[in-house]
Amino acid sequence: MRDWETLVEQHLAGLVLEPTERAEVIAELAAHLEETCEELRKRGMTEEEAARRALSQVEDWQKLSRLIQVARKKENGMTNRVKQFWLPSLLTLFFSMGLLMLTQVFGPKPWTTSMKSGWSLIAPAPMIYLPWLFSLPLIGALGAYLSNRAGGSRRAMLSSIVFPVLPYSVFFLVALPAMALFNEHLGHNFMFIALFVGLLAWVVAPAAALLAGGLLTQHFVSRRLEPGRIAGS
Image (cartoon, rainbow, N blue to C red; front, side, top):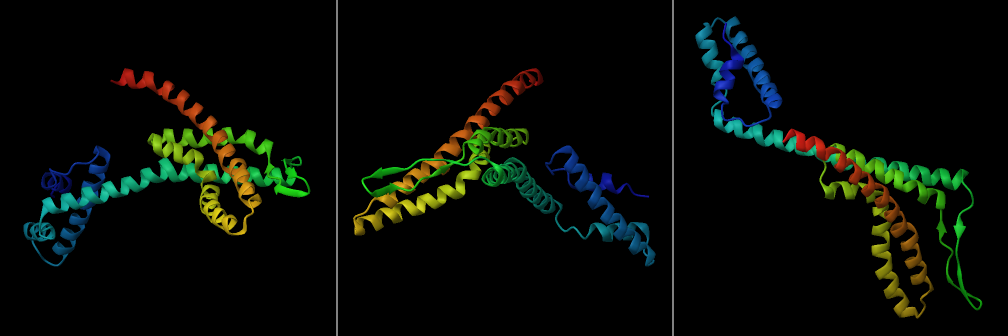
């Protein structure tokens, strides 16, 4: 009986992968070739002829090696992106929005501010939920920890921390220029001021709270990992 794994490993000598991934690829391909050889032998071929026919399915082993490397790199890249960015980002978004909903339903009445000039209301009262803001550093810390633990870059970590405020940021980036143009034609500025205050309340303040917890966590995690890296080097 042929050692198909050894045979495949010889043909894929130029395959550059992690040891575990390389072993998995070789084992899968060897199992496929062995099954093909067994089927050919059942049809009456000799072992040598069946083995030669099975190996002939791969016309260019070097090309196959390159294709496997490209496919594995893409797969690993997608997996790392999910673990380093998407999972922490979606969790921070879920927890921040969930806590905001709970605060609106069960929490205390929001602290409101208003600005008046004579009888006209200059800016509508923006609702700032202080309990929700105070909880955001913990959520930012969670996003930073998950991204850092998965080996994410600093950019991925920061993006996952502030991900909950990105939808609001997009809204204000579109609304503020549109409202500036609208006010220019009508000569009123109360809506523009209201949007600017809303930007501070729903983007700047939450982002600062998220970053406060996230950056502090990243600092402590990096300091904790530094002795291990030094010892490993």
